[in-house]
Length: 306
Image (cartoon, rainbow, N blue to C red; front, side):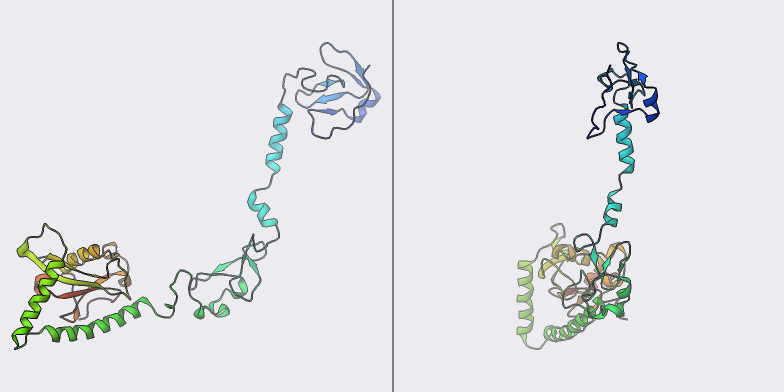
């Protein structure tokens, strides 16, 4: 008769010893070919049957519900496992697992259970509650994240206005230089300059020769960026200034968002050097521009001056 007690298993098994109350009465093994009486029987956790030591395993008594105990155990363990976020939040924050306040002298970790992080909308950095106010972290002296070095304190509008002032002065000088003069060499020099522009100019071949207006185009470097800072192009003189601007921006590879809406600080404008003014989008090129004139693409200079 099997009555010896096996040593306690070192890992989970599909069977468990019956309750201690069974020690006084014991039980008969329920395996079909075994009638052994055991004072300490085992219960199968899959089929809940009572078996002796020799038939306590699922394979030993050919369990009809083999694997049920393992499935239940897996589900219980899955429900008890904490999520990755809860494991992370319960750990002690370190420089590898947490973000530190952006104030140089502050050692506080933010985005933890005890301290939330606050992003400053001006400098785009994250601070603890103590240094969240701009005055507490000297926000005015910090270069915002994503901004170019040396551009702090100077807005896009200020830079555009300064560039427009320089261009207006340049326009007056250029205008004086191209005005007709009594010397015949002046007209000749202008003709030479125009021929030079025509020789180097690029444009849409579909524009008829008699409809072309040849211009020297530049992009103002302080307010916009272009892959081609300047060049000579021809356009259809019947076009509006707005359409001419679109074609010029495309030819010089300047970002043009005029047709997408948005604020004036992102819009491109055309400055006529010889005329010394910004051109209206609705003006016709043939009415305001001359052959061989110079135009400059400016960004964020505001509406055309009245």
